[in-house]
Image (cartoon, rainbow, N blue to C red; front, side, top):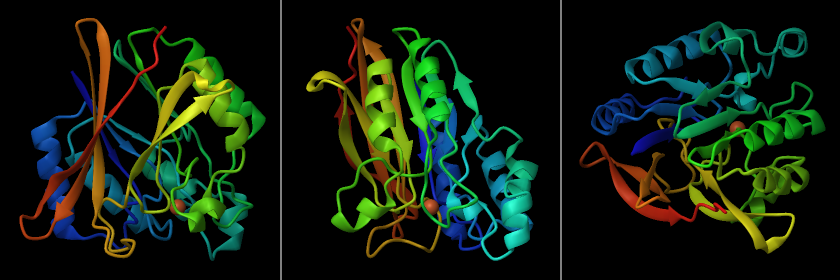
Length: 269
Ligand SMILES: [Fe+2]
């Protein structure tokens, strides 16, 4: 069995130390093959905030794959935003804005949905959509195929529709038909799992979007607590089985506790 730990929207600068301790403890227990950080790592893209975030992720003692979120580009410093928007991100989280992680059992593809010219919204270009589809088509039948970007592709609340990634109508069917199993995102601090379909709708291939809440930030939405997702994947009698477990922070036990487990069907012909 492999495990992936998705943490998102950490917004360093507004982090809660007790919740960080709980994530370190969870990581020691779960021993994920990979920690996936789906953007908004910092609150204001400041150097000290990235440094604190990197120190934290290094303590998790697992490989890390991250993508930037809109908060990881400078907001008020317009010169920096336009001339070198990813400078601080790259200094601490690596030059590659669209990293990949691959083993026999999993292929994880990072995509950068942020745009220096947009304040908050995310967008993908045709080139990005095609690059990811091409990579997905190269995956083996035993690999879990995961795409990660910051902006959501499906909403449950009507008010979140305006936050959906521009280009999703093209990206999602193309990626589902190319073999994607999961797309992981954050941005709206609301955890949920929803199905996605390819070009043939419900008669064709199915995939899932997995949204994460904010992992360690004070910027929780309403009364929704800090949360993370533990994704496990294994083959049982030759059949793939994937479970997305949402874990919520409980301030009484000071631990991330299992809140909801969703078994997601993996389409394999
Ligand atoms: Fe965001």
